[in-house]
Length: 373
Image (cartoon, rainbow, N blue to C red; front, side, top):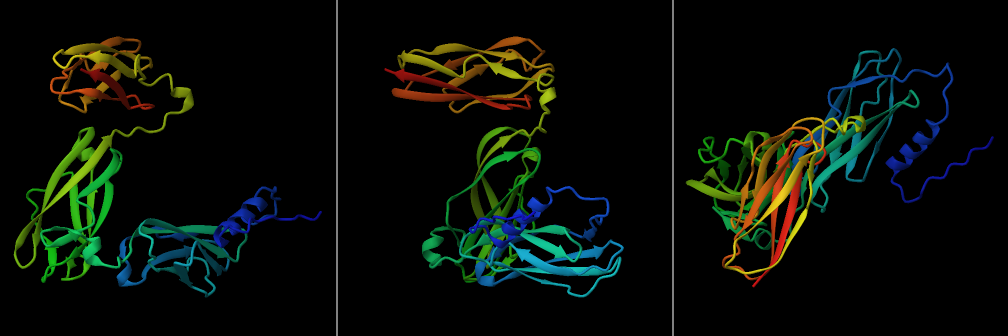
Protein backbone atom coordinates (compact mmCIF):
# COMPACT_ATOMS: atom_id res chain seq x y z
CA UNK A 1 0.00 0.00 0.00
CA UNK A 2 1.30 3.46 -0.88
CA UNK A 3 0.42 6.18 1.60
CA UNK A 4 0.43 9.78 0.36
CA UNK A 5 0.71 12.52 2.96
CA UNK A 6 -0.64 16.01 2.39
CA UNK A 7 0.75 18.74 4.62
CA UNK A 8 -0.66 22.27 4.09
CA UNK A 9 2.13 24.46 2.72
CA UNK A 10 1.31 27.39 4.97
CA UNK A 11 1.90 25.47 8.20
CA UNK A 12 5.04 26.31 10.16
CA UNK A 13 7.62 23.49 10.52
CA UNK A 14 6.55 22.76 14.07
CA UNK A 15 2.90 22.29 13.13
CA UNK A 16 3.75 20.32 9.98
CA UNK A 17 5.74 17.93 12.15
CA UNK A 18 2.87 17.59 14.60
CA UNK A 19 0.47 16.95 11.70
CA UNK A 20 2.55 14.02 10.41
CA UNK A 21 3.13 12.64 13.91
CA UNK A 22 -0.58 12.74 14.73
CA UNK A 23 -1.47 10.98 11.46
CA UNK A 24 0.91 8.09 12.07
CA UNK A 25 -0.22 7.77 15.68
CA UNK A 26 -3.68 6.84 14.36
CA UNK A 27 -2.38 3.46 13.12
CA UNK A 28 -2.48 0.54 15.58
CA UNK A 29 0.78 -0.47 17.24
CA UNK A 30 1.90 -4.07 17.53
CA UNK A 31 3.13 -5.79 20.67
CA UNK A 32 6.81 -5.33 19.71
CA UNK A 33 6.59 -1.50 19.79
CA UNK A 34 9.06 0.13 22.14
CA UNK A 35 7.47 1.71 25.18
CA UNK A 36 7.77 5.51 25.11
CA UNK A 37 10.82 6.59 27.12
CA UNK A 38 10.69 9.21 29.82
CA UNK A 39 12.70 12.39 30.16
CA UNK A 40 12.35 13.90 33.60
CA UNK A 41 12.30 17.68 33.15
CA UNK A 42 12.88 20.08 36.04
CA UNK A 43 10.43 22.43 34.26
CA UNK A 44 8.44 22.18 31.05
CA UNK A 45 7.27 25.81 31.12
CA UNK A 46 9.54 28.78 31.83
CA UNK A 47 8.21 32.32 32.18
CA UNK A 48 10.77 34.92 31.12
CA UNK A 49 8.75 37.76 32.63
CA UNK A 50 8.92 41.13 30.89
CA UNK A 51 11.38 41.24 28.00
CA UNK A 52 12.51 44.72 26.92
CA UNK A 53 13.59 44.78 23.27
CA UNK A 54 16.59 47.03 23.88
CA UNK A 55 18.11 44.49 26.28
CA UNK A 56 18.53 41.92 23.50
CA UNK A 57 17.77 38.21 23.60
CA UNK A 58 17.12 36.29 26.82
CA UNK A 59 17.67 32.64 27.66
CA UNK A 60 15.66 29.86 29.24
CA UNK A 61 17.46 26.67 30.33
CA UNK A 62 15.49 23.42 30.49
CA UNK A 63 17.31 20.68 32.43
CA UNK A 64 16.35 17.02 32.11
CA UNK A 65 17.40 13.53 33.19
CA UNK A 66 17.35 10.39 31.04
CA UNK A 67 15.06 8.03 32.95
CA UNK A 68 15.03 5.39 30.22
CA UNK A 69 17.13 2.23 30.17
CA UNK A 70 18.49 3.20 26.74
CA UNK A 71 21.23 5.40 25.36
CA UNK A 72 19.47 8.62 24.50
CA UNK A 73 20.42 11.35 22.05
CA UNK A 74 18.57 14.59 21.41
CA UNK A 75 18.47 14.59 17.63
CA UNK A 76 16.55 17.73 16.84
CA UNK A 77 14.87 20.77 18.41
CA UNK A 78 11.96 22.24 16.45
CA UNK A 79 10.99 25.80 17.40
CA UNK A 80 7.77 27.63 16.60
CA UNK A 81 9.28 30.73 14.99
CA UNK A 82 12.52 32.42 14.06
CA UNK A 83 12.45 34.39 17.31
CA UNK A 84 13.49 31.25 19.23
CA UNK A 85 16.66 29.25 18.65
CA UNK A 86 17.93 26.24 20.58
CA UNK A 87 21.21 24.93 21.92
CA UNK A 88 21.23 21.43 23.40
CA UNK A 89 23.32 18.56 24.72
CA UNK A 90 24.45 16.51 21.72
CA UNK A 91 26.27 13.83 23.72
CA UNK A 92 24.83 10.37 24.20
CA UNK A 93 23.16 10.24 27.61
CA UNK A 94 23.10 7.02 29.60
CA UNK A 95 20.40 6.17 32.11
CA UNK A 96 20.08 8.86 34.85
CA UNK A 97 22.54 11.19 33.10
CA UNK A 98 21.54 14.84 32.78
CA UNK A 99 21.16 17.07 29.72
CA UNK A 100 20.14 20.61 28.93
CA UNK A 101 18.18 22.50 26.29
CA UNK A 102 18.83 26.26 26.17
CA UNK A 103 16.30 28.42 24.32
CA UNK A 104 17.29 31.89 23.13
CA UNK A 105 14.37 34.28 22.68
CA UNK A 106 14.92 37.34 20.51
CA UNK A 107 12.34 40.07 21.20
CA UNK A 108 10.35 41.10 18.15
CA UNK A 109 8.59 44.36 17.32
CA UNK A 110 5.22 42.84 18.20
CA UNK A 111 4.41 43.48 21.85
CA UNK A 112 2.29 41.73 24.46
CA UNK A 113 2.10 38.28 25.94
CA UNK A 114 3.78 35.40 24.11
CA UNK A 115 4.03 31.62 24.48
CA UNK A 116 6.42 29.77 22.18
CA UNK A 117 6.34 26.00 21.77
CA UNK A 118 9.49 23.92 21.40
CA UNK A 119 9.54 20.24 20.34
CA UNK A 120 12.35 17.99 21.53
CA UNK A 121 12.95 14.94 19.29
CA UNK A 122 15.12 12.07 20.52
CA UNK A 123 16.56 8.96 18.88
CA UNK A 124 13.70 6.86 20.27
CA UNK A 125 10.72 7.18 17.91
CA UNK A 126 8.09 8.52 18.13
CA UNK A 127 8.93 10.14 21.45
CA UNK A 128 8.66 13.95 21.45
CA UNK A 129 8.55 16.32 24.41
CA UNK A 130 6.93 19.75 24.37
CA UNK A 131 8.42 22.75 26.15
CA UNK A 132 6.98 26.26 26.48
CA UNK A 133 8.74 29.62 26.80
CA UNK A 134 6.37 32.42 27.76
CA UNK A 135 6.52 36.01 28.90
CA UNK A 136 5.59 39.58 28.04
CA UNK A 137 7.33 41.28 25.11
CA UNK A 138 7.87 45.05 25.29
CA UNK A 139 8.98 46.50 21.90
CA UNK A 140 11.02 49.68 21.75
CA UNK A 141 9.01 52.71 20.53
CA UNK A 142 10.46 55.10 17.96
CA UNK A 143 10.01 58.06 20.32
CA UNK A 144 9.87 57.65 24.10
CA UNK A 145 8.51 61.18 24.52
CA UNK A 146 5.59 60.60 22.15
CA UNK A 147 4.87 57.03 23.29
CA UNK A 148 5.01 57.68 27.05
CA UNK A 149 3.11 60.96 26.98
CA UNK A 150 1.37 60.64 30.37
CA UNK A 151 3.83 61.69 33.08
CA UNK A 152 3.44 60.86 36.76
CA UNK A 153 6.13 61.30 39.41
CA UNK A 154 8.76 61.71 36.71
CA UNK A 155 7.75 58.49 34.93
CA UNK A 156 6.08 58.36 31.52
CA UNK A 157 3.20 55.98 30.75
CA UNK A 158 1.29 55.19 27.58
CA UNK A 159 -2.12 55.04 29.29
CA UNK A 160 -3.58 56.83 32.28
CA UNK A 161 -5.44 53.72 33.53
CA UNK A 162 -4.41 50.12 34.16
CA UNK A 163 -7.30 47.92 33.05
CA UNK A 164 -7.00 44.37 34.40
CA UNK A 165 -10.21 43.26 32.71
CA UNK A 166 -11.96 40.20 34.12
CA UNK A 167 -10.38 38.48 37.13
CA UNK A 168 -11.45 35.19 38.69
CA UNK A 169 -11.01 34.13 42.29
CA UNK A 170 -9.06 30.95 41.50
CA UNK A 171 -5.81 32.73 40.61
CA UNK A 172 -4.24 36.21 40.74
CA UNK A 173 -4.15 38.33 37.57
CA UNK A 174 -0.80 39.76 36.46
CA UNK A 175 -0.52 42.98 34.47
CA UNK A 176 2.68 44.43 33.00
CA UNK A 177 2.85 48.18 32.38
CA UNK A 178 5.94 49.57 30.65
CA UNK A 179 7.13 53.09 31.42
CA UNK A 180 10.05 55.46 30.83
CA UNK A 181 12.09 57.11 33.57
CA UNK A 182 12.39 60.69 32.35
CA UNK A 183 14.12 61.78 35.57
CA UNK A 184 17.82 62.37 36.12
CA UNK A 185 18.07 59.78 38.89
CA UNK A 186 17.36 56.05 39.24
CA UNK A 187 13.95 55.05 40.64
CA UNK A 188 12.87 52.06 42.71
CA UNK A 189 9.94 51.00 44.88
CA UNK A 190 10.11 51.79 48.56
CA UNK A 191 10.22 48.58 50.59
CA UNK A 192 7.46 50.04 52.78
CA UNK A 193 4.17 50.47 50.88
CA UNK A 194 1.71 51.80 53.45
CA UNK A 195 -1.01 52.74 50.94
CA UNK A 196 -0.95 49.58 48.83
CA UNK A 197 -3.95 47.24 49.41
CA UNK A 198 -3.06 43.78 50.67
CA UNK A 199 -4.64 42.15 47.60
CA UNK A 200 -2.33 44.00 45.18
CA UNK A 201 1.41 43.35 44.89
CA UNK A 202 3.75 45.57 42.89
CA UNK A 203 7.33 45.39 41.67
CA UNK A 204 9.59 47.11 39.16
CA UNK A 205 11.50 45.23 36.46
CA UNK A 206 14.40 45.78 36.83
CA UNK A 207 14.24 46.57 40.54
CA UNK A 208 16.17 49.80 39.94
CA UNK A 209 15.32 51.65 36.72
CA UNK A 210 18.15 54.00 35.81
CA UNK A 211 17.64 57.50 34.43
CA UNK A 212 16.51 57.84 30.80
CA UNK A 213 15.71 54.13 30.44
CA UNK A 214 12.60 51.97 30.37
CA UNK A 215 11.20 49.69 33.01
CA UNK A 216 8.10 47.61 33.68
CA UNK A 217 5.63 47.95 36.53
CA UNK A 218 4.22 44.53 37.40
CA UNK A 219 0.91 44.48 39.28
CA UNK A 220 -0.49 41.26 40.75
CA UNK A 221 -4.17 41.47 41.71
CA UNK A 222 -5.48 38.69 43.99
CA UNK A 223 -9.27 38.59 43.61
CA UNK A 224 -9.66 35.96 46.33
CA UNK A 225 -7.89 38.21 48.82
CA UNK A 226 -10.03 41.16 47.69
CA UNK A 227 -13.06 39.11 48.84
CA UNK A 228 -15.61 41.00 46.78
CA UNK A 229 -17.36 40.71 43.44
CA UNK A 230 -18.22 43.14 40.66
CA UNK A 231 -16.60 46.12 38.96
CA UNK A 232 -13.99 48.17 40.83
CA UNK A 233 -12.35 51.48 39.95
CA UNK A 234 -9.72 52.35 42.52
CA UNK A 235 -6.56 54.43 42.71
CA UNK A 236 -3.59 52.88 44.47
CA UNK A 237 -0.54 54.86 45.58
CA UNK A 238 2.97 53.47 45.17
CA UNK A 239 5.82 54.87 47.26
CA UNK A 240 8.93 55.49 45.13
CA UNK A 241 12.54 56.26 46.01
CA UNK A 242 14.62 58.44 43.69
CA UNK A 243 16.47 61.67 44.41
CA UNK A 244 13.61 62.12 46.87
CA UNK A 245 10.58 60.19 48.06
CA UNK A 246 7.73 60.27 45.56
CA UNK A 247 4.18 58.99 45.33
CA UNK A 248 2.93 57.38 42.13
CA UNK A 249 -0.89 57.24 41.76
CA UNK A 250 -2.16 54.35 39.59
CA UNK A 251 -5.82 54.01 38.63
CA UNK A 252 -6.74 50.31 38.46
CA UNK A 253 -9.89 48.88 36.87
CA UNK A 254 -11.01 45.29 37.48
CA UNK A 255 -14.14 43.15 37.21
CA UNK A 256 -14.12 40.23 39.65
CA UNK A 257 -16.03 36.98 39.16
CA UNK A 258 -16.19 33.93 41.39
CA UNK A 259 -14.57 30.85 39.86
CA UNK A 260 -16.27 27.46 39.84
CA UNK A 261 -14.89 24.14 38.65
CA UNK A 262 -16.52 22.76 35.48
CA UNK A 263 -19.70 20.79 36.22
CA UNK A 264 -20.06 17.32 34.64
CA UNK A 265 -23.10 17.14 32.40
CA UNK A 266 -24.63 14.38 34.55
CA UNK A 267 -24.50 16.71 37.59
CA UNK A 268 -26.01 19.82 36.01
CA UNK A 269 -29.40 19.30 37.70
CA UNK A 270 -27.86 18.61 41.12
CA UNK A 271 -26.15 22.00 41.51
CA UNK A 272 -27.73 25.39 42.38
CA UNK A 273 -29.44 26.88 39.30
CA UNK A 274 -30.63 30.49 39.20
CA UNK A 275 -33.51 31.19 36.85
CA UNK A 276 -34.65 34.77 36.22
CA UNK A 277 -38.07 35.20 34.67
CA UNK A 278 -37.25 38.46 32.84
CA UNK A 279 -33.74 39.41 31.75
CA UNK A 280 -34.89 42.74 30.32
CA UNK A 281 -37.43 45.11 31.86
CA UNK A 282 -38.90 47.89 29.71
CA UNK A 283 -40.40 50.67 31.82
CA UNK A 284 -41.57 52.40 28.63
CA UNK A 285 -42.34 56.13 28.93
CA UNK A 286 -41.99 57.48 32.46
CA UNK A 287 -41.91 60.96 34.02
CA UNK A 288 -38.73 62.29 35.61
CA UNK A 289 -40.59 63.15 38.83
CA UNK A 290 -42.09 59.67 39.28
CA UNK A 291 -40.24 56.93 41.19
CA UNK A 292 -41.15 53.52 39.81
CA UNK A 293 -40.69 49.97 41.14
CA UNK A 294 -40.73 46.53 39.53
CA UNK A 295 -40.40 42.96 40.78
CA UNK A 296 -37.85 40.50 39.37
CA UNK A 297 -38.74 36.88 40.13
CA UNK A 298 -35.81 34.62 41.01
CA UNK A 299 -36.10 30.85 41.28
CA UNK A 300 -33.71 28.07 42.28
CA UNK A 301 -34.21 25.39 39.61
CA UNK A 302 -31.32 23.24 40.86
CA UNK A 303 -30.95 20.45 43.38
CA UNK A 304 -28.81 22.33 45.93
CA UNK A 305 -29.41 25.56 47.93
CA UNK A 306 -28.76 28.75 45.96
CA UNK A 307 -26.80 31.51 47.70
CA UNK A 308 -27.06 35.10 46.51
CA UNK A 309 -23.54 36.42 46.90
CA UNK A 310 -24.22 40.03 45.89
CA UNK A 311 -26.69 42.17 43.93
CA UNK A 312 -25.57 45.55 42.58
CA UNK A 313 -26.66 48.20 40.10
CA UNK A 314 -24.56 50.43 37.87
CA UNK A 315 -26.28 53.57 39.19
CA UNK A 316 -27.16 55.09 42.56
CA UNK A 317 -30.54 55.89 41.01
CA UNK A 318 -31.49 52.21 41.35
CA UNK A 319 -32.22 50.77 44.81
CA UNK A 320 -32.74 47.08 45.60
CA UNK A 321 -34.60 45.07 48.23
CA UNK A 322 -33.52 41.42 48.58
CA UNK A 323 -35.84 39.32 50.82
CA UNK A 324 -33.23 36.65 51.62
CA UNK A 325 -29.75 35.46 50.64
CA UNK A 326 -30.47 31.71 50.36
CA UNK A 327 -33.09 29.86 48.32
CA UNK A 328 -33.81 26.17 48.75
CA UNK A 329 -34.35 23.95 45.66
CA UNK A 330 -37.59 24.94 43.94
CA UNK A 331 -38.01 28.12 45.99
CA UNK A 332 -38.91 31.50 44.46
CA UNK A 333 -38.54 35.08 45.66
CA UNK A 334 -39.16 38.58 44.29
CA UNK A 335 -36.34 41.11 44.04
CA UNK A 336 -37.71 44.67 44.30
CA UNK A 337 -36.04 47.15 41.95
CA UNK A 338 -36.79 50.86 42.37
CA UNK A 339 -35.69 53.43 39.80
CA UNK A 340 -35.59 57.18 40.55
CA UNK A 341 -35.32 59.08 37.22
CA UNK A 342 -34.96 62.50 38.85
CA UNK A 343 -32.67 64.78 36.81
CA UNK A 344 -32.61 62.42 33.81
CA UNK A 345 -34.16 62.71 30.39
CA UNK A 346 -34.37 60.72 27.17
CA UNK A 347 -33.48 57.07 26.59
CA UNK A 348 -32.04 55.52 29.74
CA UNK A 349 -30.44 52.08 30.27
CA UNK A 350 -29.53 50.66 33.68
CA UNK A 351 -28.40 47.22 34.84
CA UNK A 352 -28.82 45.00 37.90
CA UNK A 353 -26.14 42.33 38.29
CA UNK A 354 -26.72 39.24 40.43
CA UNK A 355 -23.84 37.12 41.71
CA UNK A 356 -24.69 33.64 43.02
CA UNK A 357 -23.21 30.19 43.59
CA UNK A 358 -24.79 28.86 40.41
CA UNK A 359 -21.64 27.27 38.90
CA UNK A 360 -23.09 27.24 35.38
CA UNK A 361 -24.03 30.92 35.33
CA UNK A 362 -22.63 32.68 38.44
CA UNK A 363 -23.06 36.23 37.09
CA UNK A 364 -26.39 37.36 35.60
CA UNK A 365 -27.26 40.85 34.43
CA UNK A 366 -30.80 42.22 34.06
CA UNK A 367 -31.27 45.26 31.80
CA UNK A 368 -33.69 48.05 32.74
CA UNK A 369 -34.57 50.51 30.00
CA UNK A 370 -36.89 53.50 29.87
CA UNK A 371 -37.71 56.69 28.01
CA UNK A 372 -37.85 59.60 30.44
CA UNK A 373 -39.99 62.70 29.78
